[in-house]
Structure formats: C-alpha cells, structure tokens
Length: 423
Image (cartoon, rainbow, N blue to C red; front, side, top):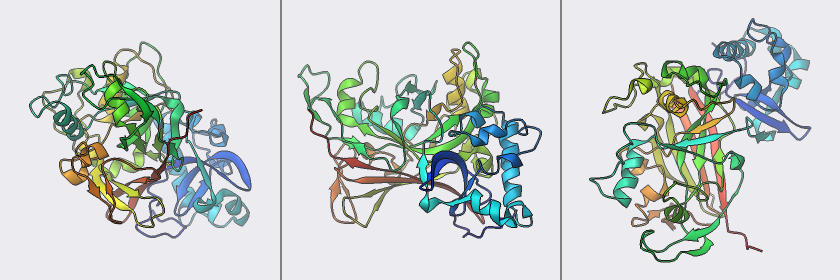
C-alpha cells in the first residue's frame, strides 16, 4: 500500500501506522480527533461522512467528538473498518482526498503547528509492575538477591490503582513535589522530615487504553482480552523515590506517584503492531488457567530515554530498552484486573510498570541506572546524575523497526521544574 503523501522510510507515521490523537490549531482551538500521517494530521471531523462501512455508517458522530472515548467504545470490527477506510483514503490512486483540493486543505494540518491534548477522558488509571528485570533489581537493592521477588510476583500481575486526574499530555512540565521523607531506614523509628523531594526519578513505561466496556461482576476472559485493548502510548510515571520509601508501607505508592504521569499524544493501535508480535516472555511457574494464553501477544518495540540539562542543546541517551522484556502480557494484566468482577470503561489507562532489560544500559529508571545513587551517570555535558535535577528534560521515544517502514509513537517529554515555595 502506497500513500499519496511522500515521506522517508524512517518516518514515525507512515500509512502502516495511523495512530489516533486529539489536536487543535491556532485557527481552530476546538479539540478534535486526528490521525498522524507523515508530518501532518488528518482531521477526522472533516471526513467523518466518508466512514460509510457497515460498522461505522451509523456511528460517524464518534469522529466529530473531542475525545476518543466514543470511538474506543465501539467493537474491534469498527476499529478495523476505520483503519481500512483511512488507509484507502490515503492511498495513491484514490481521488477522494488526493484530487479534491478544497477537502484536502480542510482535512490536513501540520503537526508542527498543532497543539496536542489528552486523547481520551481517563476515568481510571492502573499501573502494573510487570518487568521481571525491574522487579528483580529493586528487590536486590532493598531486600537481597535471594529474596528479590516477592512470593506473589510470578503468580499474578502486581499492580496498584493510580490517580487519573494527574495524567498529563507530553510537553507538560512537572513540579518537584513536597512530602515526608526519612534519611534512614523507614522501619528504624526515626521521625521523618518535610520538604521537597530530593530523589526525583522517571519510569520508562508503555500503557494501553481500554476499548469497550464491561459490567460489574463480569470478568474479561484472557482469550477475549485483546478485544478490549485499543492501542498503546509511551508513559513516564514520574516518581519521588524518597517520599515513596517512607509512605509505601503497608499499602504501596501514594503521593510519590500522584504528582504527574506523562503520556505521548498518539495512540498506536494493536493493528499497527501486529507485524511486530514476538514470543511471550517464558513464565515459570505455569500461570493459573485464567491467566494462560498460548497465542503470542508481546511486541518488539524499541524504547529510549534521553536527558537534557537546563539550557543544553545536547541530550544524553541514558537507557535503551524494549517492550518485549515484560513478563506479564497485557492480556494477562487485563484478565487479572477484572477476575474479581471489576468493570472497565472506554478510555481507562493501564500502565505496564517500568520496563527494564537485563543489561545495565537498559534499566528503565534512575533508581536502577545509578543503582540507588551509588553509581552516578555522566551526561555528555560532563555533569553527573544520581537522580533528576531541576530543569532536566526527560524525553522517551518508542519505535518498531520494520524492513521498509517504522511504526513510531512520537515522544513523551516533560521538564522537571523546581519546587514552588509553599504559602
């Protein structure tokens, strides 16, 4: 399939990708749904009338809304039909857009001139802990090599419910938070102190948006979980490690994680990722039947994290990892999440947890990269980092590399601002 728009083979957004997002422009500040193609955005509100297939002819309104929730609420058949319709409209030889100068001028915007918004209204947000290398590293640091993984870790996808209200679009600054911390062991009985976090960290994650909905009391079977996985974004789960260390006993992270979670603006669909499916991570012991699936549902997605200090034109790549290192698949995450009868809704966000590989340059957090601050990183400008400094900009990227095209996710970026003075 050849697009009538021209772009490089290394373009993030070829016709094989077509991720969805919500954008506005200076000339039209109303948020609307678009699809990234080449260096532009195809405005679906302008071509909603062209979705005339059996699944979408009575649902054209979903492309005129300001979030993707209503589109996500439809079925995988509708999502596939939408993708096929868009690919056809963008194909070389289809005159509908290519030869209609009036419609084409209204239907396309430049990404460089557009403002991106959250792609969906996120009702609920859950963060998992599904990378075995990350979980092992943290366990070794805080317990011991012999007791790195907690006894439950290989039996279920560990997770916690996060704060949906502070999920932010890429480019939004993050404020260094205040909180309680302790300079010694959290179980020593030494009183904590209060002040700005000194151990700010990033966490390299991916996340998926839920499609469709379920009712309370109706678990999603693992063999049908893919029907509720709409698409993926990059996610940075900013973490205040010193606040986390003091507060996490006994119920886990709280204020150390709710300060902000950044996601990339483009939602890459599972259809675009199908050519990059790889073997699932080997699991031992064998999962319970409700978590067991034999089909491959892991993806070869290259991940990268860069840090740029304040005022510097040079960024340093501090991590290269891959989505395929996740121990628990997203099908297993969703099946476990709902096995109790917990319902899900279109636009719910599910984070993977930090994605670390098995080598020191593939660790997905500063906690691991600096090994709890004992091995400072040296950036290209000569400065050192144990954890993030004020005005550091963290940029995450993800890409699937095909033989003659790439599937990109855009960027997930944020700058850590100094703590505000409390009034």
